[in-house]
Length: 247
Ligand code: ADP
Ligand code: MG
Image (cartoon, rainbow, N blue to C red; front, side, top):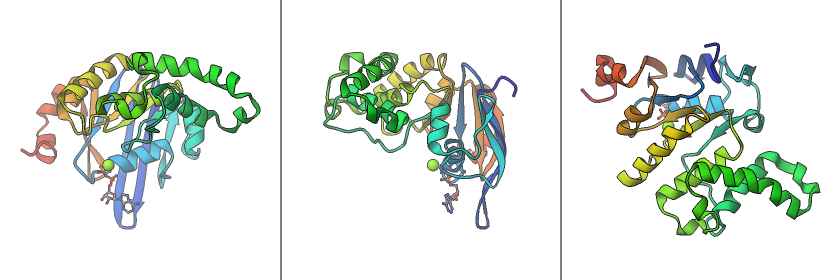
């Protein structure tokens, strides 16, 4: 656990009688994609909420780069380097790709920019935004309005919005959802390269993408991690096949 960028220690969360997170410990290490899979209702979103700061655990702790973030706000965690994309898109359709990415950087930096002229503010935002778009192979679309993009390109913009904040760790919640084979192949290819820069905790239903991308997989069922290992190990695990793959 020592070189982990992000680590969860014995997390518990109850909703009334329901034990939605039951003693979950896992970590995310430099250079890797760690996939979290599990059937609907397994507790994946509840767990992500506890990492991102929307949900407070009843017990346990979350550390980012050695700092306990368990009682920090969503914004504090983001400033410390926790990047995330959302299941529901929040892109501004009429605005350019570049403007959308710049706005996400600005939102994090918050009110301090109130005192700057718009021009100097934009110059400071332009560079990280452009770099993030290059990482997502979208710099040629920088000045295109979002409504002209394909579904797959929008997803790439959403990842770029998180990337522009130069996160230490990235949480991606079902990034392949709704993408056709072409879109998910493209995103898979991009994430394979991206993980070298920033480790990724990936929640994903597309098992083909998971088995291709993940260095490690944790399987969540009824709030508990029932299996953990590399793609090969997880594919073979009889409990996983029964609980999740429908054997
Ligand atoms: P997943 O994302 O894996 O589908 P969730 O984390 O959304 O699972 O949900 C795990 C369980 O916790 C489900 O049984 C869900 O109904 C329940 N749950 C989630 N959020 C709440 C809440 N705010 N109040 C009560 N029950 C909840
Ligand atoms: Mg969910």
